Length: 396
Image 1 (spheres, rainbow, N blue to C red):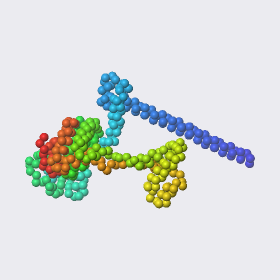
Image 2: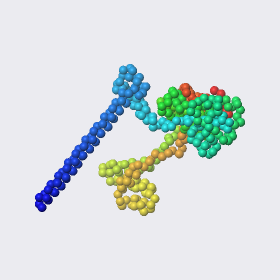
Image 3: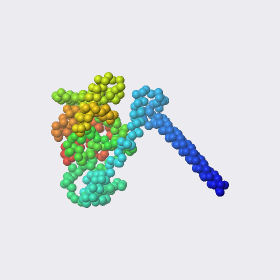
């Protein structure tokens, strides 16, 4: 009886020992695997940084490499520029368009004559409303010679059906009907793309609807490098225009700051910070003064009458949350008298049709002068109409 019990105890001890041994082995193995994984991750990071440092991913780096000058020997300001350019390059995929800008769905009239190109989303809307149907190009037409052409035919007579032959051959209509390439209009790059507004969006968004609704003429594709180069010149021109207009303003607050500092809130914040950081070293009378200021502010923010009385009486110490709330108070507030530069510029146009059209054409000229595009869509011209259903053409 005793021997059998001893045998069972030995077997149990062996099983426990085996389990403990397996646990130790598993623990050691997991630690080793975790260590190897960390080392591998660290090695990959070092390798990635080395590739970024040595790879000629920018024209600046490749230029100095050709001269035999290493990046470490370059002045600090050049190295900073290279670092900024690399950082921007790493974010190109994030800031670029996720889908092509042009779907190039050709819209045809009832007689299968081309009207314009639209997006796939708009084409599906026509199909869903049963006012359009998928079709093929007219035999012998220019569209029939293109490959993989998608067309939609309208099932009703559209507003422009009575256009003359001369109007149909205009550059504006040619632009609307042309197949547009999803490439940078400046360098022809077919990589990452950014939607670029020839008339800056800050101005375009404030213009009347006729100049922005269903008007894609002044929205083009640029690669990130060309976009940055164009934006630099655009920002300078915008700042120059806004400064010149502010100089002509008679109001005293023409150059006022966009934000103003509330002296009372700034004092509340300073008192709260002092209580959090240096309460033990501040004289008691100053501590009382600072706490009174903070309590007054917290009481103003409190809606409950009972809680407001408890804060003002000072029976309880200020909590960490209350002090933190006072420390994070926003003492800079929006200046109600400040007028943004974009509004100053658009207001100067006085809703005058001719001024607005000249304004848009001037931005088109600026874009052509700065970017010198070589791949603009067929039919795009500086003197094309600037508004929907507009016959205005400015001679340039």
